[in-house]
Image (cartoon, rainbow, N blue to C red; front, side, top):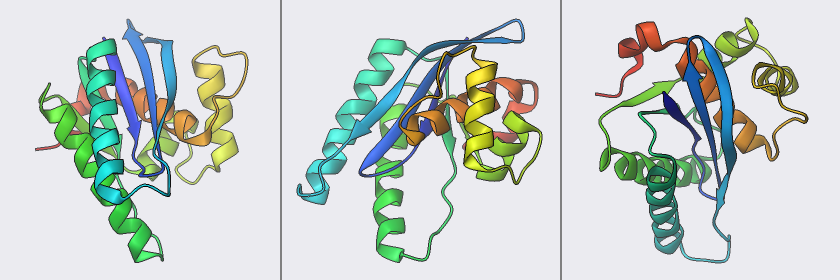
Length: 164
């Protein structure tokens, strides 16, 4: 089962692709979609839309999991990230109805066993669980891999986390 994990963002959207088979996860690919800050928002969103279509075409995931947004103190940043997440969700929904979402605390709990783990602990566990030589960089890509791992481990109860 190919799972695409997404860590939404406007400047940097992380993605991680794993193959979950028989309780084991194998790394397929990870990376980021980036948009330049000096480009107007509609064109940045368009780049995310196109990038998401490319990811769906290349990896043909059977299920896609998103990290749920949490609101920061900067409302403008929150709105922009929300728009980017919406565009990414719409692009994925064009190709599949197998959409899921997890909170940051659920992701930390699933990957490390502790819902309040710090970023480095999560990154180290992602590296170990996927038998990687190094921690995935940038952080957004590592976070997206953690989302994919979370979904793989929650698949039996995954309908609880399905985006309706």
